[in-house]
Amino acid sequence: MGHREELLAGAKQCLYERGYARTTARDIVAVSGTNLASIGYHFGSKEALLTQALIEATKEWAAAVDAIWDTDPRAPLIERFEAMWITVVDSLVEHRNLWLSTFEAFNQAERLPELRRQLSGDVETARVAFGGLFGPAQEPADERTERAIGSFYLALMQGVTVQRLLDPERAPTGEDIALAFRALLTRFTP
Image 1 (cartoon, rainbow, N blue to C red):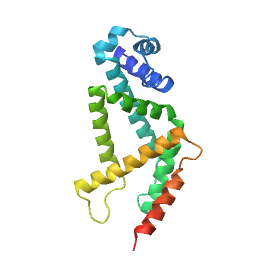
Image 2 (tube, rainbow, N blue to C red):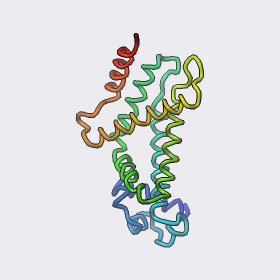
Image 3 (cartoon, helix red, strand yellow):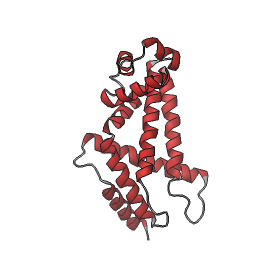
Image 4 (cartoon, helix red, strand yellow):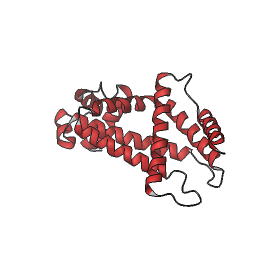
């Protein structure tokens, strides 16, 4: 493993152990066994390195969630919706420190334009991924509708994540989210 990979691995470890805001360049160097100059050479700044590490950690989380979320595509949409949210909520518990670091990064993005640009792009990628999560209904949705669906799922996930971080005992479970969805469908169906 080269310095670049060692720095990324060290930065990911620091994100989980110290968080985005509290991780220093020296912390990353100590964990990775590299040197301070390597950060500048490979990433330009500590913030760029932490951002890349956060992106990779989030992708690893998404791949892990995808791997354990195995539903029958022929199952009713509400069952697949519930299975997805059970998996996501359970994973939020397991990856709590990743999500704490993510929200710290959101806070830092206001003052770090490059971080903001990167996170904004990642949010758009998440919208697109969530928008196509369950595939088209009877008719394929137009691009605006798919993006709106993705934005809805992303807003729901971010809200559930905040609730899980702040008040895990009373935060909704995956089953609660599906219950609410069913209730809303009933209320909106004439």
